[in-house]
Length: 231
Image (tube, rainbow, N blue to C red; front, side, top):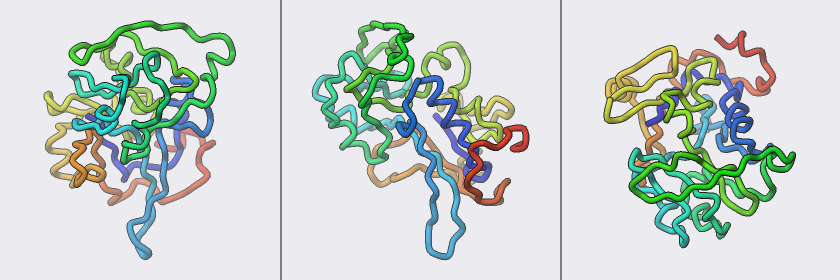
């Protein structure tokens, strides 16, 4: 489960750049989309990171004709890029526009430095290697399963200097941003946590805390700011 605290957001986009770098995502093909949001004409705008929601009832899995998109036992939704045929049915089915199509090879592959990974999966086991992105297939946030296997946090969580992202285990009722640890159920209850498009019945694993009592004002153009100034 992931919790995103919109009150801590400063639009540094360190989460996005870390994700793109670690997954060799092309510029403009962001797996984390940072959207400027405003609920109504006279309300204050805020920044909202949007990623794959790793739904408990993922519509993307249901429409894949070749079983390339699947949900693991731990709830993480992954794509097998070796099996994906690029039909993009999953992109059409995702209500969160969380997926991107790989029109080109990844930066690493285009530079001749990609490592080949091969694995076979089934719905009851977690693949121990995740293949690099392949041209002509679909990519998206994967919750960095190679990090969680090692007991570490996803790259977006550890890269954020303001503790916006919190990650944890729903069964353990615990989430952390690395510096702070919270009881998930209390955090969601006390801070009025919510999920996007709840009415669709997708049961997302990503929760948001509303942008109240913000740590920073709404600003743009901070992508190149010094992260030390963000604390």
